[in-house]
Length: 157
Image 1 (cartoon, rainbow, N blue to C red):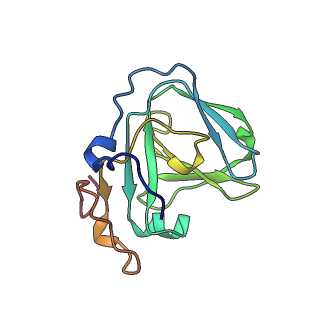
Image 2 (spheres, rainbow, N blue to C red):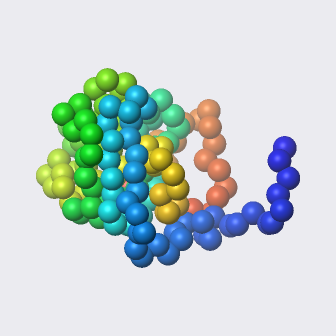
C-alpha cells in the first residue's frame, strides 16, 4: 500500500474545486482515439448513476459523468464516428462506433442543453468530483456502495 504524506481529503472537500474558469480547454475522447472533444467552460456538476441501464451499458456498478455547460462542448475529431441509442423513456447514450467507448448521454428532447460526459473520457483532471449517487435502489449486490458521504437518491436526484 502506498503511504500518504498528508491526510486524505473528505468526500465533501473533493466534490468541487470551485473552478470558475479554465486556462485551457478540457480535452478527451474515446478509447481508440477516433473521437476527440474539447470543453471550453468548467463543468457544472458530476455524479454517479447506479441504474440498471448504466450498469449494462458500461459493464460496471455505476457510471460517473459530469454535466457540461450548454455550448461549451466541441467535437474536434470524429463526430461522424459517434453512434447513439435512445431507450424508451431514457436519455440518449452516445458511443464511438469504432471501439464502443461510451462518450456521453443527453436528454433527447434537449440534446444540446443537457449533456453528461463520461468522466473516464477526460485526458486529465476535469476539475470536478461526483457530488451525489442516483438510482441507488438499483445498485448491484456484488459491489457495495462506498461510505463516501455523498448524498444518495433511490431514483433520480
